[in-house]
Length: 245
Length: 245
Image (cartoon, rainbow over all chains, first blue to last red):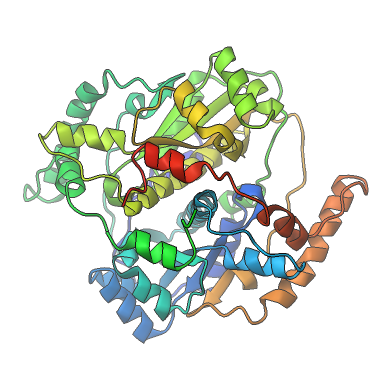
């Protein structure tokens, strides 16, 4: 184990930040580290909107279900999957993009994931803390309008950044033997391993909340995944030129 | 700039590896570093299939359009977006998952992206090289059958790993001012900036190939994106329980 892997393994979401501002030069460095990640067939499909305007920040906080740190964090970035820039690249060569493929939705979304994780790792290496905000997809059309996103660009998630003013524990992950399989998907032991893991998650929550929250991982999943999941998403994406074929 | 950011910025795909094997202990360490990344609402939706079987490796190479390193790399991992494990978690609590939402497809795919980039960064920090293999989606149904993936699991991409036996240059990325925007999506200067960037990409290819390849970024995009993009993808994903609503 080296220092980089120790850094990766020490990740926890930070939702409370000091007032210390983050220099624009640092933000640029983080974005460039994001760009250095692999990109599918060189499409470079991630665009970052840095939101400084306080009115927009308040509205994004509302869109995310009122998570105060979306409004308050020193830095708030919206990471977008962007095929509009590729359309422009085609136009620069008098070519017409053949867009709307589900495959392109995957490549652009994966590009954003790889980019974002590099950005977050770079941030944490500089002592910053971060939390991903999938909540902006609660009102995704409003977010897209607010940031004036053109067709073929969708906001995947936000990231809050700043210097940490809290020090939460690392949350225990699934045992590696459930997540890493050899040669084929064999889940015959998974239920038993998950049952054991459930106990460690319940311990984690009890310790963290002084006994107020006591929930296993599988209980948490079943509480959440039996509900509707942002049912507006498919229509929004089609309206913006994604997932058409 | 620190050593972590230097590591991130030095990324280039490695497609040629020495024969030096990679210990299983290291692979487990890399997967655990992947797991340490943020995960949307704690769903932990990434499953890794490590493919050792030489017959399966040959078939995966065929599926990926004959990229030799898919067969030859010391390690080949297939990273899957997995909602099957969450279905199991629901069943363990006598609950029925409400699956098929496009939103869940996004969260699971993003989980894989964040996980994979942590895994790759950890690998590179140990002196390993890596290349992502989106090509496994060329014949995605065959890959899913080969790895016996159940419904609600799809193979997003592969990763080849090993000790580098080549030392390619870092590929120049888009200027940060195109990728990072302030408060809204304003692309009024993008065409001009991309035209300048095009020259540096063309220089990169000329230098790398001794003059044999000379192509700008926008030419490369327009050559690729005017064609069909894996048109089987949507039907495959629906068949496996994704993107139904």
